[in-house]
Image (cartoon, rainbow over all chains, first blue to last red; front, side, top):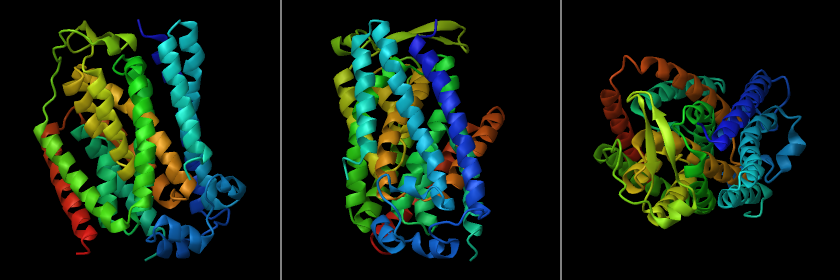
Length: 129
Length: 279
């Protein structure tokens, strides 16, 4: 019989990934069709994507950290919503496993799932900047 | 050149990559970073971020069916993925701190080493694990899956768990630093080192990659290195290509495709080295 953690993970990942893909494709269509103005124009982008990220940020005023959330009205940065969704799916999946393992009496595995959530949240928090 | 040529070209190239990756049994990330990094104008910082996101989305897409078929195990992956997630953050930070030339040289060497590893390593279908070690038992790293090809249940257990943790720590650094994903290393580490049956090792490798790719990808995202014009067409191309690859799998000759992949990796690795030396 399939372990419950495998069954639950499969369901959460499937639903989350579908949502993320839908957002990603829709937001890219908005960007490519230029329905919303981008922060960096297509003409400038072609010139600037050869630069290291630090110089790119300095030249364009592109946001770092969570700054992209303030720019969701821009065609290019709207796409980061779909990208971030993939990350959120992963965190949500591991977080869901913590109570699942605890209920099953698998404390060591619950601890590892918890640690995984902490590591992912730490990466997302910007603490390593 | 008009801007729209780039996403269209990326879509076509990554579609082909998706087909080839499935037929050759390798992850998309290991092809994407060296090939796009070597032959496209994007800076390596953006290519590595896109490579990680590509590896992540491919692994997430495959995970549900692998988990449901019993060919991936959360129980096996979980402790190892915590270690590789931590070290892949370190790898991403290191990659972003290094000068581009140094990184190009290191990438070239890594790609050539991966090509050698792929050429030399032969998986063991059902490795012999005489006695599981105490650590693997404490972590619950054992179980059973049904192999439809053999028509029976296969019991699995693991050994050398400590060495496995060390191996996944190293894999995390390389994956985060170069944005390569980690399927090329996860499978040999699980199968040849820890004694996981080959099919389970292949299936679990993808699930294992999810944690590491997520943590490293976030480091690149928060530095501003995620370029939608590069990332989104590439993700769509690889996912669609992989779907066609699965259909072609019955008729194709994987050994031949694998040889093509090895040649591509050697060329891309050599190109990265030359770029690093300014040639």
